[in-house]
Image (cartoon, rainbow, N blue to C red; front, side, top):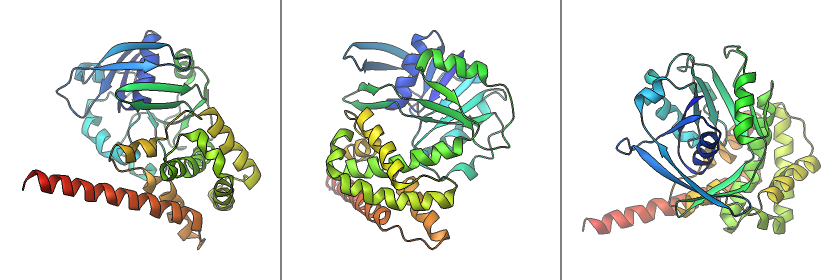
Length: 308
């Protein structure tokens, strides 16, 4: 299978690595089109190390790709896809894997078969090394009922050979909302406490308070899950990814904007529709936004000194 991976961060490189190792023809697609390859250096769960060189930005490869996997930050997806959509053949399956919600109504320009994926693989990048800490479940489904109905069994089987634990789900929306709830807890808390996922178990009271709030609003979103079960789900993810550094903490450490607007921010916007007060989510949102403000101020300070 010929595959292009748009977004070569930690997750994108991990997927590209496994798909390449399984015999697929894989390339990455970067914003910096001057590069014709990237080096992927990976440390596995068992501490074994490996590396590959991944070709990038070959337009002919993109034209002929059977699958385009998009692992960009949610805020970059629409713009980046619009830049290359005319180079993607009409039969190419586009699979979006991203944290958060809020862009689904902006994807109507995509005429290719469009899927959405959720993954519980734990991976982060540090000093150009990819650390893979947990092989989690990956769930794939149609982004909405209007997506062209074709047989995706072959795709799921091929992805399973490379990634393991890949399943098809008819109602992906429920799983997407549950993953959103997981991200609403783990991402901001790890960023606030500057810790790996596993250290969050020390903050049970905070987790419980946030879960009470999330459980209530999820009912309005179409997912019925009580506080106890939500705490169990999130605790399970924390345990499985205990050595991982959340994507939000990585962003803040690297002086980048986070995806808070599409995670807790999405919950806050939805709550306003029903006049629900989500104090815990607002508090987390404001703290992360304050950290982002410091990033802006620091960047302005650096730029200001550079040119004076």
